[in-house]
Image 1: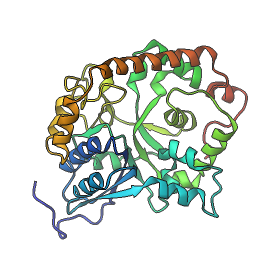
Image 2: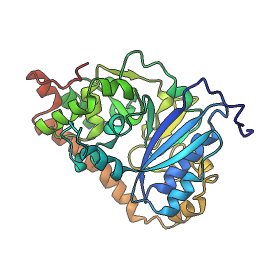
Image 3: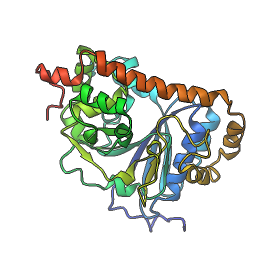
Image 4: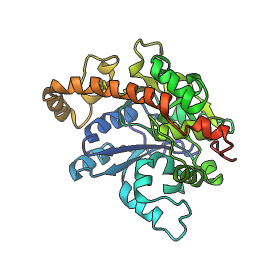
Length: 331
């Protein structure tokens, strides 16, 4: 693909803004995600990739910024500084402290970046196989966010029961928050973050997926369900999406540890093009066998947690709504 020039770029189309978040451990995996995104972007379009980093080495930051190309910039943003600026501002009406903002950072993106009106958020354990501008340009039809149904919830009885007990709806209405299309302007207009912090500080439901559950609970009536190709969940088993745009290695079987998992070959194809390929090979070589057992244990713990919440949790989002609490966003 030829490199774009200043004259070949289309200035009439909005810049595609994409957020990632990473620490030092995940930096090499993030380099694969960004490498794949840039390999599939439209050379006539501008892209702005913002990495919310915490504790990342200068070397890894330099490598990520070095992935920038004429039509795409990679910017490092120290999340702690942004959060401190927000929570310490004289205009802070969010009743949110540093710890809360750090834990639920993706929900705070509209407030942390007030000049950005629309954005994509991607988890670090993704690989992009088509132009993300296709996702960015989707008409949200008046909804606040767009996301893909979380099919992982459909295949485990514990998660099926959890969704009904916690949220009061079946799994078909439950989304995965690893890929989000966000109308940041409208989220600011309705004071979404303030509504979230008020709900968070007043009620304390036990949750299996934390911020993902808050998104599902608050935005259930304001979410556009997107085509599954924009978040193909590797944990689902057989590949039933013919033309994935974003592959998401959710849960525990990560391709950098398990090169035999479904679609890992696609991830490793882009890993070989990334600046951290040798480091990734070394990490794979040194992956302790005991960690396989630990990953299996994590799966069992997640299922056990879902069962426990289903059987004993109080309150739940469903019970709060039944009691008249404003859980859904006020538009």
